[in-house]
Length: 175
Image (cartoon, rainbow, N blue to C red; front, side, top):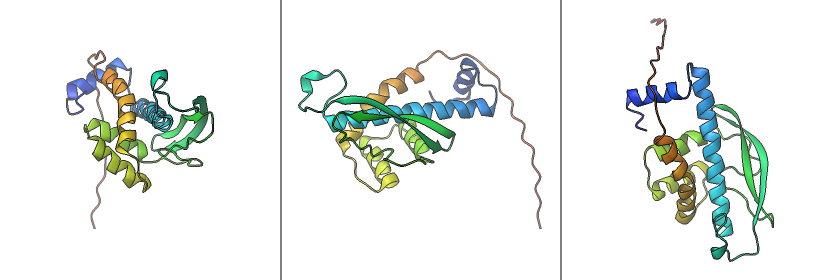
């Protein structure tokens, strides 16, 4: 979806029943949580060396072992994440680290990376900027491969028309 296209945004709002800013904030919160879950899943795939159900490429005795719920604070409020686990307990996600409870700002960076159509190297530099650590280009590529189908599905969904009105009131005082 082209976010600069006001008509498309209006369709999106109506199609999803968004009538006020509170509902819009909930949509952003849900999108950020879903996107983070997919990115974490991509991190685990990279750690294990194979994608889910891709047993042909499995060259490890380690495997997936479900998820652990985790609540983190974000720009949009508390978000429940599903942190992937591995059988041997060796997987340590870099996107949302152990004991990290505040991800304020991370979701904005992640969403902006995809919205801007950044390259793997651009995304890699942003992640390094956020964490100060290194994530390989291959890991970023695996993560984006996991998320892109969901982004494309969201971009190509059916949209309807809506008219939104915003009233803004202010008072300016100068000394």
